[in-house]
Image (cartoon, rainbow, N blue to C red):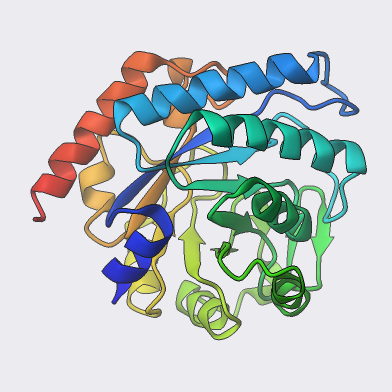
Amino acid sequence: MKTAKTESIFGSDRAVIGMVHLRALPGTPAGQDPLQRIAQEAVREARMLVDAGFDAIMLENMHDVPYLKREVGPEIISSMTAIAGEVRRAVDVPMGIQVLAGANTASLAIAHATGCQFIRAEGFVFASIADEGAMLDADAGPLLRYRRSIGAEHVHVLADIRKKHTSHAITSDLGISDWAHAAEFAGADGVIVTGTATGRSVEPSELQAAAGSTSCPVIVGSGATSEDLDLLLQHADAVIVGSSLKIDGHWANPMDQSRVEQFMEAATLARSSRT
């Protein structure tokens, strides 16, 4: 059942999704580049991933620090829509959108407008305290109603559970299994398990517990490397990778083609050992 769901989203079981971190967008503190240059770099990295054999890609406004909580300006939505459209025309694999921080409605609108297949949603269930402030109102209800209202039911919602860069003290009585079950109950199409920060590894025990608690695909959302990929795919249905593909393994650096190819070689070996 999970295999069919994973394939319906990413086109492959045990899928490998490459993250394209967009340069800082216009209007953000670090924003310097013209929009066309940002789009060109995004297209270049997307093609690098697809040429290496990645199953899907995702665009994220990672460089827009410090992030706004939930509501981003029209300049961000329009910029990401324009960039996503350029990337969509350049590559023919499943594609996703994430607008930080927790701007899930914006992500859904962009994905629908540009022909993407999925979004990554923060704050879908329960509450937490993130570095951009308190996300106390889970948005599963309004988000899925918005999806229906714009006719975007084909866009899959992948929900972060106990997400990175976040304190979970106010939900400390809930384990990862509770989060996974709640996300599925609320209508998520997949759940994403992360380490404590970007580039930090997922705890294998957390991944295993999540996988045993939901019929949704379980996706690794941080810290994946070519060295631990075989272990991760013992329990995960898909892996999102960004930092490990960059020069020196740091998210803010440009993508390193040798690292991209090395990761995909490891993925091919890990998947072939389970066929």
